[in-house]
Image (cartoon, rainbow, N blue to C red; front, side, top):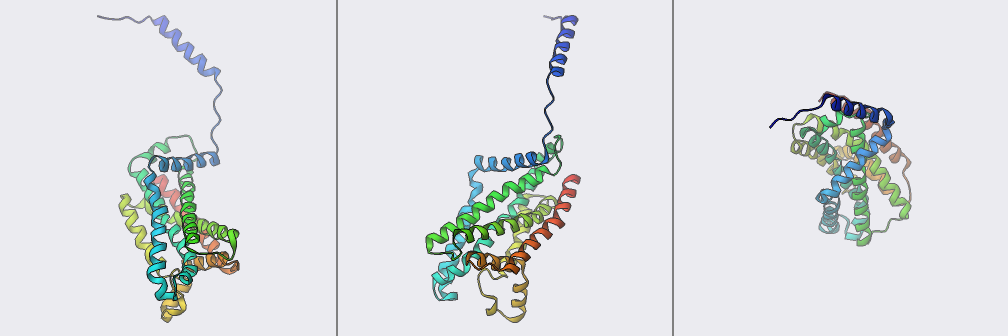
Length: 279
């Protein structure tokens, strides 16, 4: 059985479609901010569909806090309560910084699955997927830090700086983490698989975190190691966090932490953008 198509009817349909398109106003091109926020919301939707992604920012910080406080508190500080007062601001730093590794893992996952190629075909501001992804990850940083503070308060920690000091310390750590996340974004664009990004990221962040004043007072360490710990940016960040939560802000430590965060972003943001365009 064969069917015939009336050429006149086809031409009329085509003309009707063209008239409908011509009569519709072209939607405005999205701006850089709205596009970046859209991609940030995409990161939140991924958590909504796979809630297990929040395990690293909820269960892991609590596990670290309980283990270090009750296993080492008595031996290091003489009591768990005294050690909790010392180490909680440091564990706030450690828990949030560990989460930054997953920024590179997430970017590498999108890259290896071809999602990035689809983003490049969209008429949007080119860096929007990168910036939006890191903005979405910042919400994870806030969640991880909030969990640490809430559990610490439940265990008996009382910041002398009050709620304002705790919020200021959390904000400083999140800003620093946002700058550090650009480093792991570069790693995510260079490595071939998400597992490689995770392994390389933690190989770098683990030594720097443990060779800091997060867990012990540097004055108890050998001379050369004490000098390294004092110069470690993570130690400076932990000192700034402690000072804010104690209600006695250390201006130098806070400014140095902000300067390091700005320097990391200034150096690695352009590198990330270049790699993103070339991969």
